[in-house]
Length: 155
Image (cartoon, rainbow, N blue to C red; front, top):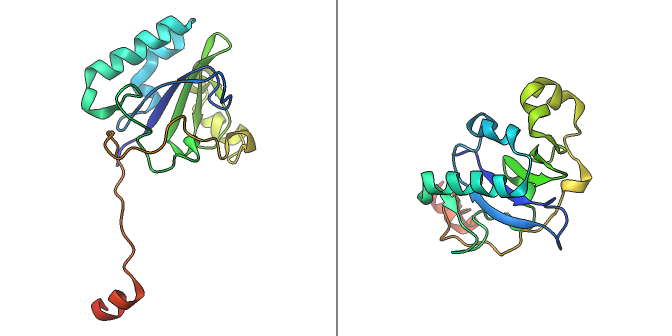
């Protein structure tokens, strides 16, 4: 499975002001986006995301062409990483851990895990801007539960 990432302008918790730029299904690790630490305006952040999208369009869920790429459209922070440009910086969150600046995360990764709450309540149950769309690129394997009657037959 891949390391999933979503990209936003403005704080994605703010449902009225956020702008979803897309999602990457694989290789969403911060080490792959070191240029984010130098970005100081939203135009350059959008350019960086467009560059990511153009590198491998088959791995990028584009909001222009479809919906949310992951089955958890009721909680966007279930992604591995969330990147957002707000307050004149790129911020990062890992799952439901709290936001920190991208630069601080890259400099102090080990400290991040110890200083941020794992279940930051402000990141829980934030809905996706668009419903789940299984035609979008993703890295999810969905397994169907076998019914109890079939389970007995297949043992």
